[in-house]
Length: 494
Image 1: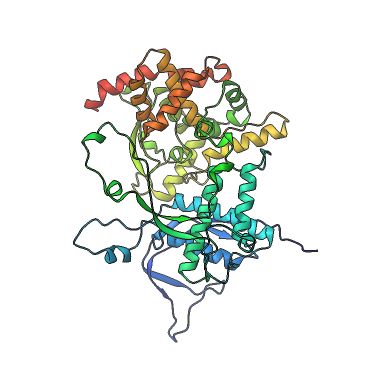
Image 2 (image 1 turned 90 degrees about the vertical axis):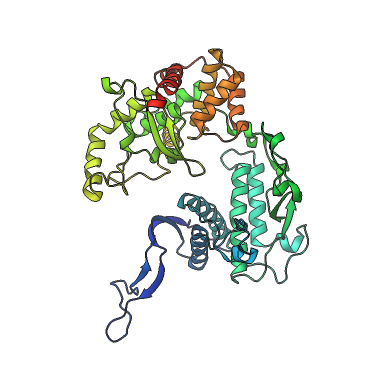
């Protein structure tokens, strides 16, 4: 009987120095200086400290963790990237651009990759396999024969496919999540092969030209053909290791992923005990009344917050300076009701105590450490995942009380915001082009395709029965006219 280790791996967020010019400290005799734990002390000529870098840890898989953590560092620093550097000037050769570091990733993206690698590591531990187990010769066939299918990476591939096809909702994995997981592991294998940790890749890999459909734009008739259209398509790395589209279920369709909360689901959420607690309540309000993502809520600073009821602020447009998806900085206009909720939160006793701790540590008006709206008990900015974890806590509460458990996510509150705004504007008789412009502004969408889905939802769903959500919802949707009017009238003078 084989006993498998069921210990799960962990992602530890820690301060990590990725600086240049590292050197060990030596004493007068030339011997290395060690700290209390027996670790050699060192320093860098140029420091580059990332305070919350994700590192994988498992007590019985140190080697794999070391490899994966080095991979995460190389991705973060841009030392490894599957995309070729763009040639920006003819003054430099292709070889020059190929020798330069690739695009660096932000720590949020690295955390996402770490989560996918953690899922793979947990599977390796449970299966008793090692990722170093590959093949003796390079793979040349497109199909996966019996010998190849027994390798860990292909067993893991089958495991993901089985979960995508599963009818058991508690075990089921969405198609997109499975695709992201296998893509992260595949990139890790390519990196390992490039640095010589594994002899051969256990899947096919080919750099080939892929035809893409051009995106129709109003100005397309007046544009010159791009390099991709002249050459016939984009050059991409193509592999046989991917999740087949044929196994997608209805729940994986784009429309399913964008559905808002129904009035019944919102009633379940807002009547929970969790939703009555000040911190969790304001997180939900930011998503439901402003369409904010979890990491965007985290990034709100107190310098943008004011009391909209004060006489001198009556004509001031409520705006938040945030960085949206794709590192896009925006000055986001929000409803006055949401600004008031944020202001009330900042003057609460708990918030003021945490503000004192933050200013004690970082000083007052420190531009490098601006005062956040949302802080933990230590006076530091909450993590990017904290607001989004609210739904998990609600689900836990519902399970304990034997209630129906929510299946919607925190991100679905953003879809709810967009759909109800669209529904309100439709009922007001606004044209579709006007609704499109309003939604693209409020949601910071770059593609009309995404915005149109919300408009289509608004036309097809009934959202008149607000029920328990009336206190939070009707205020903002009734405030849309005023919000947009103030934007038009006062923006030039602001």
